[in-house]
Image 1 (tube, rainbow, N blue to C red):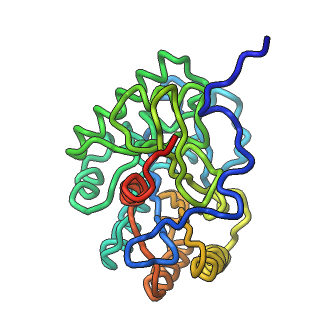
Image 2: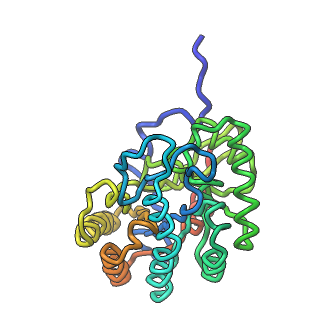
Length: 307
């Protein structure tokens, strides 16, 4: 006999099909746009943390040829740049425009920069928990992962004064993650999915659970993968996504997640593309620029779970 997967692990190739629900965004918006600032610097794998290697992911030096176990001081300094400089540039771009954002924050990273944590707490931005550290959760045992989730919630609550209500892993979850997130009991949603352009419900055991999908497509990670070369590449690519969804939104409104990384988009030659994008989106009518938490709360109120 074949063991059946839990419902939340079953694959769904149909989704909403040709008739997605009308999200009824506030103000009759055609499109909900959520800017996601990933704060990871200081929580990545490193020799100093006992991981046995230096992380180079999503940096300008992803192809370093140091032997395994060698300390990559260049990559370490690129992560430091994100927290020391990149964060403050993005903080300025958003706060000057009075724009909301979501910070997907690794708890240990915020602990290591109390000034940044305080600056986030002073805004109206929301925090989506990005784990205790910026690591791949599928390498953790179930007990380790449960501990990481608990430590992350406690840490972010201490450093910012409020517990996180959303969850998102590095890249993707383990087969246990969603169940452990629901077991923790305090999360309104998770974003460990790239499967849709609207939130959707699943069940974890007997518990309804909301998914607010994320995107690796409209994401500045393409700078690290040499897809984007200059700021105009970034601006035009994301603008095209916005324009199509805005046109479609006359009949079928959707949401768009725009992912940002301090050590990538935080550099001036790239940040100017983000600057143009923020001004462009602000100039559009019928666009709801909002926090991830607000999307989740709206969906729960307007489209509650139905068996």
